Image 1 (cartoon, rainbow, N blue to C red):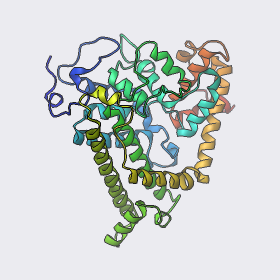
Image 2 (cartoon, rainbow, N blue to C red; image 1 turned 180 degrees about the vertical axis):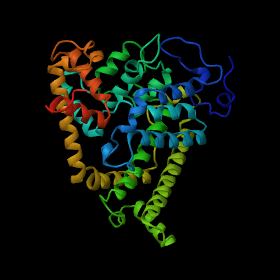
Image 3 (tube, one colour; image 1 turned 30 degrees about the horizontal axis):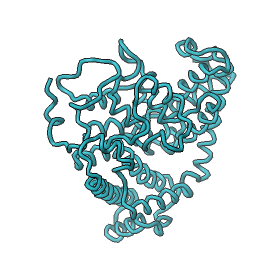
Length: 396
């Protein structure tokens, strides 16, 4: 079968080529009209876990407002940035987009607060990590196909989901999440190497997107003001330029114009620095990039300094703002209450989950409860908490 034309030409030699894919765990005929990475992307979009991202916290709990970003809108924005950068660099944009769309599938409700709570609760049972849970979602928990569990994605997509932030087995090896250890017994994802270039670009697109969009959401939520940003390198000067150039536009347009410019500056730096590293590496094939021993995608030294200062500002002025602390505190308590009840009384799980659980308090039950809670949206978790703890609430 010939590959779709747009995938058989125009890619750099070191890109991930579909003709060289290491394939899928379960053999199946490939599509006559779509490349294998395009098919991966489509399967992710149609997954139930992807739809649920619409009601999962990015920074603000879902019900706090319709205009703040959710995990779904964030993932779409990351995908747009990753796809554009991959196209410019001659990388496989279908793979880059698939990885961007899949990178947050394992996030539980209530954002990082929910993950911290589940990680603490699951510590005696192998821990909880959203990257590992993403792998679990796409290889096990999605129950859509007649012949296998999961989405049966290509090796390259699975590798990128697990290793987009770099090798996870190093000389200073840490204990790996149980989900990754279990899957490594089935399929070797070469955990000791870097991922291909598309996954590295997707990881940087994630970093670029959430910094800029958190500035946007933080300003619109009133957690800080444009004046508060004035001394922040790069950001302050961009806002100053916009205010001078467009003194008569409203606040919403001012924010959008400044954030748009900031994304452009950071994306251009990422493209130029990644291209420089690729040229310097001498890589001819994608496996040359995996074995290089250092990332090929990243910001320049100057932009890394700006990026670090932006993160510091957001941590101090947004992520630790008392309004967010109150929201995340509620989320942690909901997660802990649900986990504590369901692991000790698994008979309270819905029927299809109860059949999967073991005895109260054991490893099997802990994993089932973590999977159940991890797949919840913010509002479902709140509703389930009310059903289980409010004596006057209806049980269904």
